[in-house]
Amino acid sequence: MSIVPRMSVAELQKTIRGLSAEDRKVLAAIATRMKQRHTPARRRKLTAAMRAMDAGEKFTWDEVKQARAERRKASDG
Image (cartoon, rainbow, N blue to C red):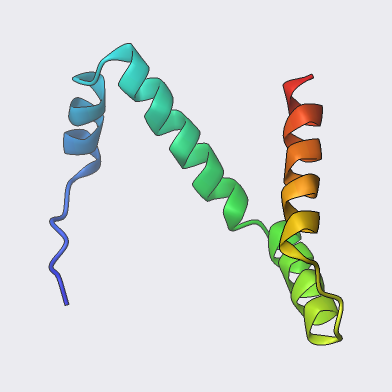
């Protein structure tokens, strides 16, 4: 078990202010992704996907790669 150092909110804010604009942008993106991962809607979607897999709905690796490529292409606009 590792010990995680604790920071006060003021210390954290000071540390963030000391980051470059690019690093703050990356940190904001990470925080947004973490927040989205823990939403009730995401948990419901994940639960539904797990139930479908347990029921036998599986995909080949090629199908997964194709779906990811299509999703990436759609998000790139």
